[in-house]
Amino acid sequence: MDNIKKELQIVMLEIENKNMLKNGSIFVTGCSTSEVAGEHIGTAGSEDIAAQIFSSLMGLKLRTGIHLAFQCCEHLNRALVVERETAEEYRLEEVSVIPIPKAGGAMASYAYKHMENPVVVEQIQAHAGIDIGETMIGMHLKHVAVPVRLDQRYIGKARINAAKTRPKLIGGERAFYGV
Image (cartoon, rainbow, N blue to C red; front, side):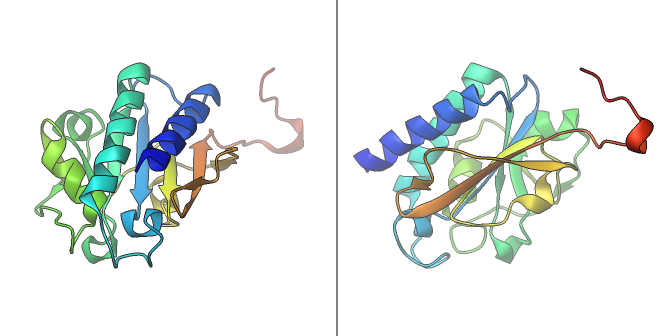
């Protein structure tokens, strides 16, 4: 668990230093705690691992002013746990479900139990995010998603990927996109 905590600290620092977060932006996390533990996705969910990841992300939120979104597993169609305030600010439609470890995943379940005023929404267009254990967060990112290469490539045994988004470039070869 100490190793996971150190790896999380490195990842959060890298994310902050990559300038991929803006105050008020939405940061989505997809996470398989099973993969972090070295097991196959969906087979060994861990609230202890979820607690470490949640704590690290809450620290990131406090330092940067972002909104957090936690992706549920496929059994809840990858719905997302967010604070009610986020859902209202971004006009996200709430759905009626409460994630539990076996239907939602350990990470989303833990987030739901520990957020101030959580709700579940069906879809989101986040500005950036992290995928821990290849849970496929791409469907929740705004167009155009740009990979962010992190030096720390694993948390526990789970591979991680990060992404940010940028506005679409339109207008073709004669367009000017700024300096």
